Image (cartoon, rainbow, N blue to C red; front, side):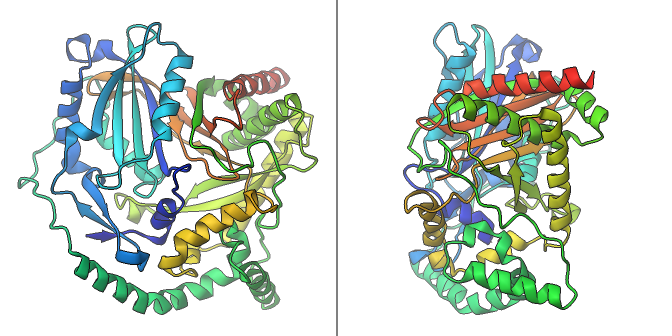
Length: 484
């Protein structure tokens, strides 16, 4: 068995009947390249079954420690059932983008069954009549952006010819599930070893606690972090500071979540984004973040809800090293940056965004790569889920400010075509997580000359989420005209 890290456990701890912790991707397919010109559930399942030995997490089932005394474990499921995980359904005619988005929203709103490996794949027929899509759904406790790309890479091919994978050396039998007494013993050992974990994490984490917004609800932690940072700088430590002191304003998507979701998707031409980047000497990521700020400004103005302060965005950053490739799980840092919705001029906003992200990179250099993981060790595992939920409850129910307003994530992807069971992938739209107080997530992935955008929102808080795709296109059109 493999034990979850503290970051993996946090994604599980945040779940509730209203809040889920899975991520995924909506891939549009051209099935004319598949064998026989058609992708069927049977042929799709055969490809996935053949690749399972190369993707161990797809067989992992969660085993939780009694009373939450320690982080849980991943067990190779001896009762693995591929038919449960790989499903198909059809959209009613005419299968429009709006109908597809609604179906995706309903699927992602449902939590995964913790009694089975935490993933599902849906083969969606009837998209625009005769086209097809595939929706993946996998728990964030199992993957981050980079490890998720590794899993998809194992399932995808570089040509329509379906790659043959060597069979495993032995038939899969799974692992013996530990009994409650054994798990209780492991939990007691975890409790006994907690002071050692805490002591190891203390020196590198303490000066940066101010940057870990998810610990703000723990009494004394913010003050302790500020004092430690002052002491470190007083003894010649790094003066680079992040944006931990930023205060997120209230927005229409800063409330407790409902149990329902909305989803919108669309694409921007990568060539236009790069032309803007080159014209102003910034990066593609700068342009993406500035586009999000501009689109949200338009939406907030239209809804008479523009705050006087910039929004605060959470930007996940991978800290996975080359040596950690293939290890799965989460190796991320959650960075905090201003989203400059207060600026009306798009060029001024782009340049200020570039400066803010440069400062974020500078502050990141002074932080330990394992900051998020080590920071969670300041909370005993048995209290982690309560502390995680308390942080968000304080910001949404008891008059406090949100920790962040939304997630903005830009994931670099391949610029060459990929194939799934012989069918060509024509677009890949990310599907990500929202939380209490942060009811909006904009994730972008570049693929084959496009920036493919997936937006997830609370159903009640952002009822016109599809309009944000049009606002992003409008913002890019403005920047493109100026660049030209």
